[in-house]
Amino acid sequence: MENRYPYQNFYQLVEKNAKKFGRKPAIFEDKLKITHRQLKNYVDSFARYLELIGVRKGDHVSLLMGNSKEFIIAFLAVGKLGAVPVPINTFLKKEEIEYILDHSDSTVLITQEKFHKELTDVFRNTKIQKIIWHGSYPELDQNNLAFEEGLTIQDYEHIKPQGSLDDVAVMIYTSGTTGKPKGVMLTYRNIFSNLINIEKVVPLSHRDRFIVYLPMFHTFTLTATVLLPLYFGSPIVIIKSILPFSNILKQTLLKRVTIFMGVPEVYNALSKAKLPWYFMWFNRLRAFVSGAAPLPESTLKRMREKFPKVPLLEGYGLTEASPVVSINRMEKQKPLSVGPPLPDYQVKIVDDELVELKTGQIGEIIVKGDNVMKGYYKNETATEETVINGWLLTGDMGYVDEDGYIYIVDRKKDLIISKGINIYPREIEEVLMAHPSIEEAAVVGKKDETHGEIPVAFIKLKEDKTLSEKEVRNYLKERLANYKIPKSYYFVEDLPRNATGKVLKRVLKEQVNAGKYD
Image (cartoon, rainbow, N blue to C red; front, side, top):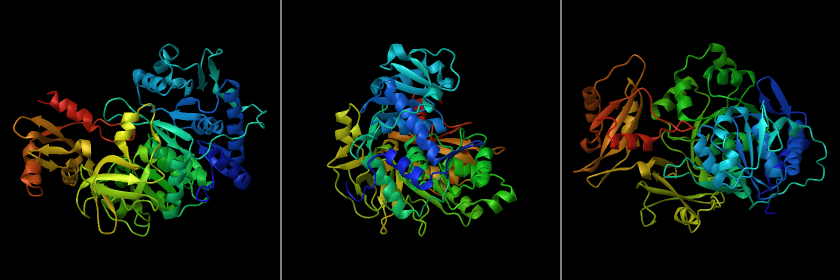
């Protein structure tokens, strides 16, 4: 075992924490507190339960569950047996869920009653043989089992944790921006490399407390707010739903949270919220971390004014990189940058021929390191197109400055090419969102006979604000080159999003090209 990797699997973390921090809290959920020792007992018991129903090393077990202690127990128990957990996006609909269950070759599904409707045909349409239900479920039989039963089994001493560094630790399906979702296989080495590297640049310890309100099925949440605290033996404060937002703040205060991970949408709300004086006075926050989508400069500025002593560190990652690639440092941050790469990773900016570009030139970001995925499940073609000589092609466009700080300009797929000129939607969105009346903006390319594509803007106004297309156009004319100025403006109530709050530009693009807004 390499000395860089003190652990072979996640269960070893559970064991270490039970020995070292036995009576200390591992999980807070509502009024409940679970110690590290209790967590280990639950995981042991549930692993035995899974073994009894036939789960073996290498099997795939899907998890369709909201944020809960049960999600964490199930995830760790599946891994203890050397089986592979497959967390599923809880926002998906029936057919999308069935696609993942079937494609992943999962034989067991762990879920809760609220997904009952989506799962009516699972036995017929997938390879699932057993479903374990958490919460009340009316008809239990030999194929529909109760989760709670799995927490009371005692004879588990014989089960030795399976799983070594190069085994698959988790399989996460990416939200398919192109076609069907792909199963990203991440090994224990991939994820531990991420945890070890985060430890090198962010000073964390078992005294920190993390809050988890973003969905646990998402790779950023799973690595940074479930596995990272487990790695340090830090308590996790579980919030079952992002709404009401006031509850997140209340729990942050009551449970003395120190590390707050979020997405831009959350910081946008937080920076504008009227926070009670006692929150500002008594909170224990040490750091805010932002991931999953670019953070607008205006939000960063407001957060800095509101929390001058708590740095907001923007990072960057993708599922295929387990997921963190880079993060701003406590000691030095640059606005609009996602920071330098983590210490053991290499990042290059390349052109379409994969030739490295000079400092400051825009190209595709590629990454190399122990965090690069094993590959896409049952999809060698896609794996070979995405990982070339160990380099992961991210599909993100950006540049690196002279200090090695990375700046994301846009998704390669979002790039608008108009008369052969590259237009980066994010640049236009930044300018739009700096307007005092604009809450949010998304810019996409619309097909055009003479230009190939033209930029069009979707705008969501702040409450009680009005703006005309002419006013927006004049505002942009003062700040952007003419070729970048959108040709049409659509004022909308809301923008379509995925589970982590990322705006679905693909949907907007499809709608606008189908003539929905004409």
